[in-house]
Image 1 (tube, rainbow, N blue to C red):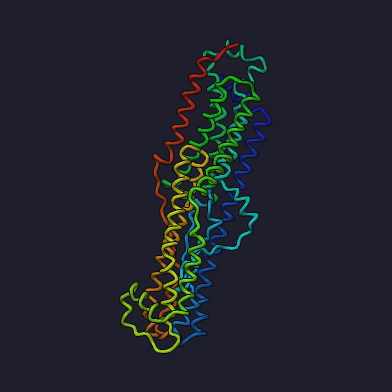
Image 2: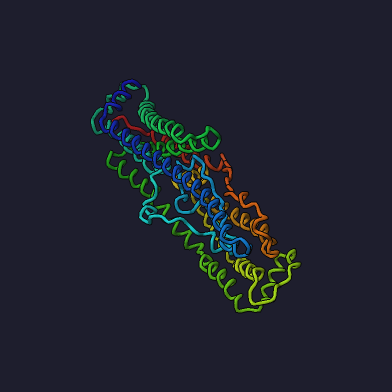
Length: 449
C-alpha cells in the first residue's frame, strides 16, 4: 500500500515542480545569506584597515594637543555575526553591527546606522528563515489539502475503504508520504547550508533545525485537522490559505501595531534633544557649574585644576560628559520601553506559531532586537573604557608620542545565544498534539460513503 501511495504521489507533475521550486528558493536564500556574511566580513576588514590609517593620519597631523586629537579619533566596536545569522538575517540589515565612536557624547553616536536602500529594507530579505516560515507552509497546503476530498471527488473512496484495513490508517499513510518529501527537502537545504556557510554542528544549529521540523509538523497537523473535517477540496484549500494569511501576515501585523501603540517611545526624540541641549547650553553657563557636575560624576578628577581662560579641554570634555549624563534618564526610559515591546511581542508570539518561530530564529541567529540592545550596552561600556583611559591624558596634556597608538584595534562583541529548549519548542508541540488529537477524534466519525 505504501509503495502504491508513493508512486501515485510523486508521479504528479505539480508535486515535482513545487518541490523543485522550494529547493530553488531555498538555494537562493542560502546564497543571499552567504552574500550577507561576505558583505559583513568585508566591512569588518575595511573598518580594521581604516581605523589604523585614521589614527596614524591624525597623529601625524596633530602631534602636540591631546585634547584636539581625541576630538577626532574614532574607535570601533564590532558585533561579529555568527555564520548562522545567514539563515535568519533579522534586524542585522537595519541595525548596524559596527559602532565607530569618539569619546565625545555617546547618545548621539549609538544609533547611527549604515546607509541602506529603503526599498530593499521595505521588501526584506529572502533568507532561509523566510523560506521556512512563509513558503514551506504553502507547500504543505498544496500537498495535503485534498488528502481525503480527492478520493471522494474522484469516486475512489469507497474502493479504497474496502481494500484498506483502516481508512484512518490509509489517510495517515498518505500524510506520512507527503511529510517525508517535505522533511527531505528541508534536510537537503540544511545540508547545503551547513556546507556552503560552514555552519558548526553545535547546540544552536540543532535547536534551529529542531524548531524548523516542529514548525513544519505544526502545519502538517493543522492541515490534517482541516482534512479531518471531511469537507470538499475548495473548502479545505480556501480555509488553509486563509489560515496562512492570518498566521503569516494579519496576526503579526496586528500584534506589531498593538505593541507599538501600547508602548510608544517618545523618548527616542527627547533623548536626542536632551543630549544636545545638555551639551550646547553649557557654552552659555558658568564653567564652575559644569565642572561641579562633572566632578560629582568623576570625583577622581578633582585633582585637575580648571585652567584660566575662556576655553580648556577639561571644561570641553566635561560639557560633553554632561550631554550624556543629562540625557541618561530619557535613554534608560527608551531602552525600558523597547524591552517592554520585545517582551510583549514574545508573550503574544507563544500563541502565534509563525511569530514564535521567527523570534526564536532571530534569537538563535543573534539577529534579534535583544541582541542589538546588548550590543548597544557593550558600546556604552566600551565608550566609557576609552573615556577613562584618555581623560587623564587629556587633562594632563600628555605627550602624544608617549601613547602606543598601534594597540588600538577594533574590539569585538559576540554574545552566545541562551537556548531555552522548553520555551522554544513547547508552544509548537502543544499545537501539534492538540490538532493531532482533534483530527483523530474527527476521523472516528469518518464515513465510507
